[in-house]
Length: 384
Image 1: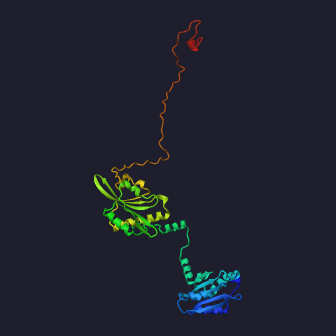
Image 2 (image 1 turned 30 degrees about the vertical axis):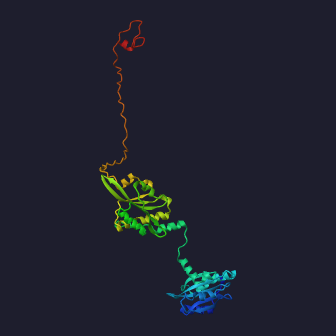
């Protein structure tokens, strides 16, 4: 920028910059542009902590129509000395020429003072932005994440909760992790009653705002009523006491049901319910001592029929194993077996022997034709 304006620092600015960097005497240095040169406007010495005297020193130096630069010293230090805040004041009522001139000369001033001493930079057009509260808001905005769209925020949440799996030959420990939201005291009390069989049904839901697993319902539920307890537009956790008979014995089996109605829920809801499920079930089994016979995952309540629950709790055991079937060998170059048709049997016909002729018929009489000659005696007849 100095090549654009050609403005350089005067000797008074260079001297006070050197003294300000060397010790803790100066709290504030104001620099202005006068006669196309960076000149010293004023300076203030430190008497209290930087926060206590910030507004009383900075705000009175800000004019409504003239830009300026202010270097304000903090009480913190780095390896080069005390840290400073660089304030660039450019009020709305200043002329366009002054605004452009100060904007183009900002890099020159920072280079002259030394960028290693400047911790933060603050630009303002109104005094509220240059006050101590405005500076703290500036620091908060720097620490805050960049604004995201709804889709980007959901993807960010998914990446934060991705399961990191250690896959190797020697892996023996459980590496799948989840989000361990605590269960609200009402939910814990209901689960304890369910464990003691004072309740036969408990429904839990995830509170995203408070990051808690809360109680949703404890209505007495028969098997025929269970499908109606499954919401069609939101996910839930269910604990159901399945009362039934098996091989002549009466049983009461604890069934955990995780209902997720497909893509009717948002990505965030599906992700959080899936991540909270395993830690919540582990806590119920270990802390409450509840034995869960079967864990199910469904999309809608229509799946929860009597036959379905019975087959899930008591899967069929196959007594006879399938025999080993010898695999077919490769076809090879000969190819697969082909169907052949039987050939028709040929009969050989013996050629007639010209030297052997049929029995000689009686000679024909005069006027009669010979049977072998076809009208007149043949050579055979004549030779005889």
